[in-house]
Length: 191
Image 1 (cartoon, rainbow, N blue to C red):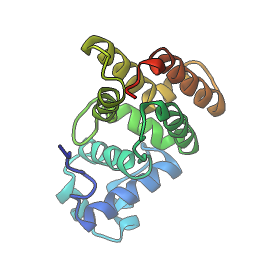
Image 2 (image 1 turned 60 degrees about the horizontal axis):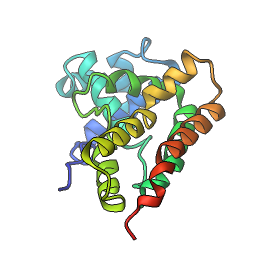
Image 3 (image 1 turned 30 degrees about the vertical axis):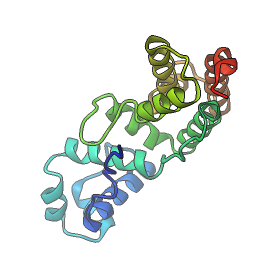
């Protein structure tokens, strides 16, 4: 079943608003950005911003979902064993745009308005079902949960802020951990 793409469902005006806000977040953070500044950057009237996003929270949540779906968009892995490299690439992307990664991490925890705390969950589950059908449901659920935890902006923010790790160290640690999780099941793949 295909899930709807919230980015594709946006009007051109909404895209302009979310693009403008994400650019401004990247430049100055979230605190110093007014609706007037967003409207000016988007080339629209301030009332138009309010028409689509009545509150700052609505705008922030929609922008976060847009950032995750566009700026931090990922190609689907063809194999569950390609996921460690995809996680590494995601961590590197977060490191290139730290202000945006912080916004996505904060709002993903709220899980509303298009934000998804574990956007790859269904994909990881499908890959495991296909490639390692011998996994029972609890084993598969544990692997999916662990991979989703690693593959998140929240993990990047935690390692960066709380542990003071460099971007390269975060990318390495996330990739190596994902590989360590998957190594024990390599010999159980469907041939």
